[in-house]
Length: 199
Ligand code: GRF
Image 1 (cartoon, rainbow, N blue to C red):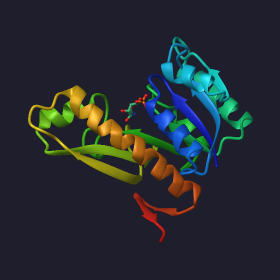
Image 2 (image 1 turned 180 degrees about the vertical axis):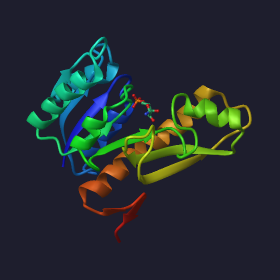
Image 3 (image 1 turned 120 degrees about the horizontal axis):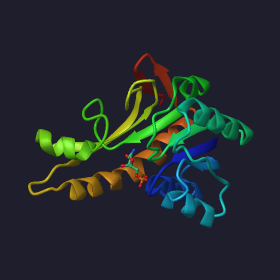
């Protein structure tokens, strides 16, 4: 399964995926790492690993034009699954329709709770006792789409946004590769909003 990774920042989820592939735990290949920001540490890390990278700056570029340039690059690289790994820009409906049920995202909350920015702070503000992360297929709504898997963590007394984010991030790094491996092994079926894992 040829992956196209889209990122805008740190890239720790991308690195966890690359490590899972190197360790033989994820049967996939990174065909392209694409960033909309030249200064994203994640794209520098990808370059240092010798992976194919591409920067398509999005600042000041209309979304439709930027997304169409990304679609072109992804198709040139024969990408089969688009993996959003901290990609901080909304995708156009045309982009989403070009990869039906072939775009996945990770979000640092137990969706459908706390979509959008600063999900971990939203969880703290709400006083929930369990937080976590979600890997899901991307639909046209914000942080929406059939859920592939979730991992939970406790919220501890005295947690800050940083401490909770760090605890969730550890689980993100496990969850993303697990979800991708289910897709790579053709182990999942989408039934409406539900993702069924074949046994
Ligand atoms: C992660 O918290 C992820 O859930 C969210 O953006 C963050 C990206 O972190 N979508 P990183 O760039 O993978 O380190």
